[in-house]
Image (cartoon, rainbow, N blue to C red):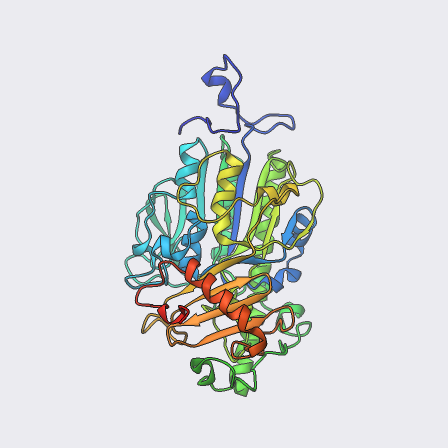
Length: 479
């Protein structure tokens, strides 16, 4: 790998190659002035579940900055992950869905990602876990020095392999079966810890579990604990759960029947099991942070914990993802960096998954070519300057896609106050989140919001450019 030569990390005059190749120190110094970077990414985890993760609370939340308004710009696994890797919206990555001609691994252009940027600057890079939907076999994308990724092994890759799965281990397929020690989150944690312990250069660790994606299989140690089995976890029944009156919603929502008793019980079971899976992720976070501390790398390591999207537990009669509702686009977003964060706490700026790659690039002092997001480092320093007050959410419908077929294609604008969505069906939704955080009343037809509606229509036409394939929002043009 090339030596670190990025802007922001000056090299003393006369330094030798041997002097630059700093190995692990016996003192508190790190191996290089460049920070290590750790991304911990969960799959379908809601923003409001962090309370069930004691290690995340103690090691990240209480020692870092929690972004209370963390979001994704496409609430589906593969497009969100493509945005995380590049800092780009779906209309730039070309990845709108989990499969088909406009989605999945085959639609992603992997030549320029945060991995290639950092690897080119001398970072040791490693991915452990889920890469992109429909990824399989032994291909290793560019930019990765260590590759330990779930593989479909020539068949359609299952979205959440907890047991009995294949891993591409640096180009060799390895099968893990059904023993307790094969539980995937634990396997990934062991590999990630080994990576931290063995890396000699500033490193980028991408830890990407499938938890808590359905079918959400907890490890045996958490399958029957009281909190998770239901004794300490009451049913989830917020105001918008199984919404009774959806007459103000788009037609596809109005056509959804209310959840029956069996469906409600199924969703409750899923929720309990999802809590069990994230307890295993919590264990993994504790082990990774401990490895960073043991190697004296913790202080100069930027750790970001987030999810690729949220998921509905019956709100508005919906039990999946892919929508622009809060339950789907809002995600946990926590950053710890002891060398840079003077005062842990919370931040209410709008941040998104498109900000991850440019943040990592800025921390390492390298460019983020093509990124449409922004580095959040000024927010961590308490000097935000001008910041966004809205962002775009995109979705493309694909017939037969089990995770998105119910929702027609749309573009939406999420601002600090409003959620506005325009659908391929020429229907609109507008929610005043300051007054209606549960999104119960679509006010797009109310005269008192006419000016707000017109402003958001114009903003959508600016942001949603180009629109998802096959969508035309010309009907929003004035006149």
